[in-house]
Amino acid sequence: MTETMTVHQALCEVKLADKKINQMFSNANDFTVIGVNTNPDSAKANVKGIDLDTFINNAKSSYQKIKDIFNRVDAIKAAISKSNAATMINVGGKTMSVAEAIYQMKYGIKNKKNLIANLQKQSSYVQISFRTAEMAVEEKLEKSVIALFGKDNIKANTDEVLDYKDKYKKKYMPVIVDPINIQDAINKLSEEIDQFEMNVDSAIQVSNATTMITIEY
Image 1: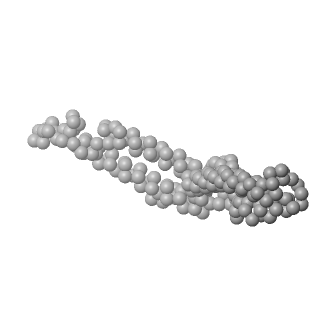
Image 2: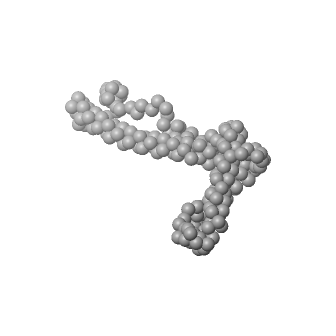
């Protein structure tokens, strides 16, 4: 059997099918395929008060109904997956397949947010470590100036003192090593996330409403 519908219609049908299945499983009257006949030799043979032939027919019918639903849902989901892999959409200026966009929604964006958190943590730690090391060098420099030029020249701006301080700082002052420009990386990742989250829902909705799929089962 072959049937054509939009992805949106297909998704709605899958959702409805799941609801029907759950309802059948939760209601013994809708889905009972095995029971006990307590009067096998009697004309009144029954299972839980239901005529034996009726029970047998209902059991077979219910089971076939579940299998039919499963087969249709499987076919629909397969068609949706195929379509999602082939259908391209634009999200925040980037072209990607619907499948990729869905992956980003579920996993990719979460990974990027975790990366941002890690970068921010590293940056904060390094800033604190840098400031601590910087203060330690400043303290040692002050003591060194006192030892060489006397206490009265700690804040002196003579060429000799300034030259000494400059050389000392160049030799001992800590320097933050930031090969990737961490704040710029954080800003770019944040912008990517914002653009994606602002546009992905509408892009997928429009695609689902206009993209046709063929179901075969």
